[in-house]
Image 1 (tube, rainbow, N blue to C red):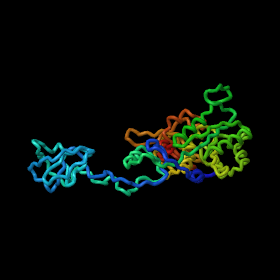
Image 2 (spheres, rainbow, N blue to C red):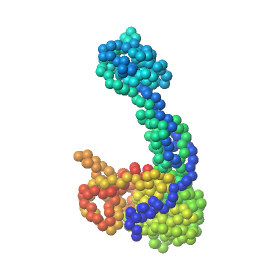
Image 3 (cartoon, rainbow, N blue to C red):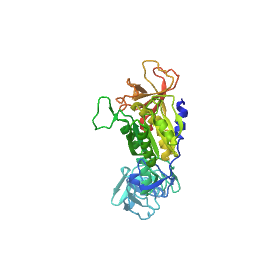
Image 4 (tube, rainbow, N blue to C red):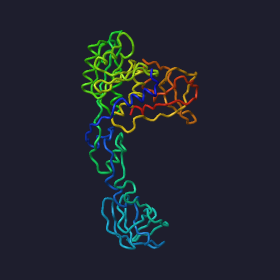
Length: 401
């Protein structure tokens, strides 16, 4: 068995980033991966403007206690006339500061009467003026290639006048579940059968990362059915995820089927719990990740092992999400010979200190605790963990994004 860290890195390096790109409307770019680095083509703000409602003047003309004539009123979006020496201009938040002016007085500290304005505070030069390009200047680096575009990135690009953006094409992922005992939801079920939750789980996880669950198939536990399903998925998809049939049982046929298709098995069995019977193969240059059959194992392996590979293939700059270290609450000393991933709930104790609360039900086949888990706590192999010890924490909001 491979140790977890080595296997995780090998899986993350299991395929290169795709090169296909497409141009999409900016409004549809959230969750997509930026294909090319972008630099600013527009100063922001494009000219000196007022940060407040008030009066713009030239500081050199200011005399304490001496009113100034109000030359004009300039609303945001209007082009004001150049300031006449010794006069002031009524401005509003976002108004361009007229040429010649360099200071703004808030309206709360000004009193206008009969076309004259009197200032009720001691002024500072350049106060309340937002300078041209002080936020963004032409030529400034904006976003690196491989950026996962979030709403704030969309706002940044819109501020540059961009309405379309080049992104990497969405990664096409095929999903294959196996097992004669599985029945699709909505279909009749006998007592010896269970509903197939893994297909829906993986499809949702894939789509949640901005990839496409292009094809979702189920195959019976026989060589011909598996071979046909793999061929279909490999012809349509960039990456294939299979579930079940990868251990050493009599009907675990995925490994020999992949080998019969010319597959090169580059990784098999990882020292982790749940998730030991997993594999990585390449068929015709395309990666195939084989996951164990229990839903809890599928969830854990996808989260910590498969997501870095997906990010790599999507062209993301950041392949691994953040891992933090947080105290674990446990009633007994925990120690295993494998890396253990516990479903936990992130919580704050009465003192406001973060801690991880593990669920009692951690079985690989249990699905009941999965929806409430905020993340996975990693217990290092062969290391005793006691109440309050800090452990690695894989936050699902980060690792599944």
